Image (tube, rainbow, N blue to C red):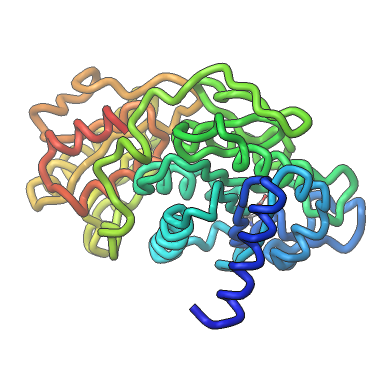
Length: 349
Ligand code: DGL
């Protein structure tokens, strides 16, 4: 660590010791929360990933009433452009900060398009009970009634809250606190865009967290995965089920090196008769087949219900939506190729 950084860290920790407020680090990655539009009426027309982290923090001075904060600009991208490498880089930085005794909580500002994927990934691989809170916004800070300022304030307040420890990776959007496992972007253009099919964990109001339930699945300190042992994620792709579906996409993904295919099926993860033979053939070649559902918002894919999963040696994604199923498969396949082991992981995480 360079001399100025040492001095900055010493100053930061001395200020904290004097002041007693929790230390929260804000890692910025881009997205709309860092976006800028041409005018105050542009709530949906803007450029994402423009505003640097220090300006984001300066835009919400009240943050300093709840925590001592400092920012790091990890990326400056729109989140639809996230790759597995971005996930690994971000996860390793979060893990390193979480190990620091002078860091009490971490906030990640992120585009909302793939925020749910990053939050679930971190929930799977971080071995810390410190609060890690992922936050975004649906409107740029330049728009009327922008939501980013309060979302960021809420995220820092949750990251600084002692009772947020041990709850896994969290997402704060629109006054709600969600588990990174369940939440997804369910509306593409409103401020109350993020929903969890089993409901939020709680709410954050005027800087105080109110909790109403706890996560039910394994996460963070209870996980068997570890970001520090991961240097790559398995290539996994998703293909949609629909009327008149063809097997072309599945074949192309497998030829492209996919180690698993997530079938975003109709209803209970059903597979068209025109596609089943291709999936069976790909399974025989060692590609894992994981049935998810294109139907989101509650429910789960039941094993051996409309498809003989045992006979075909397929996996079901349980209640995970297709994009989250991809994240778990990409991590799980770095540890096992065994179908039963994969199915266990999909039931436990
Ligand atoms: N390009 C989208 C992203 O970075 C903007 C959406 C947002 O952040 O709200 O995810």
